[in-house]
Image 1 (cartoon, one colour):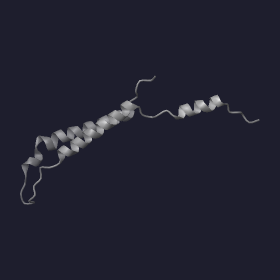
Image 2 (cartoon, rainbow, N blue to C red):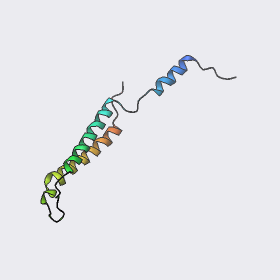
Image 3 (cartoon, helix red, strand yellow):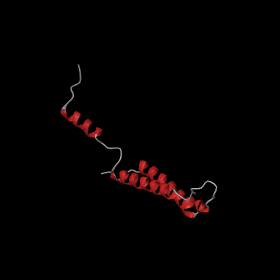
Length: 90
């Protein structure tokens, strides 16, 4: 005979299916990581020259080379942490 499915069993299955893979903290960390990445790429802009025959040394300053790279790497690290972060179990 076929097994009868009770209402209790179906509600337990739907409760298990409603579990979200990420919590609120994960989404906040993802947004922080995206902001760091965007800021890093924005800081990397500029420093070039309009005239191709003129070389501009400003392209090699601290902001373009070091600060933007650190922010981009930090953004990727925050994104990885956001994916693997497990919040407190209730």
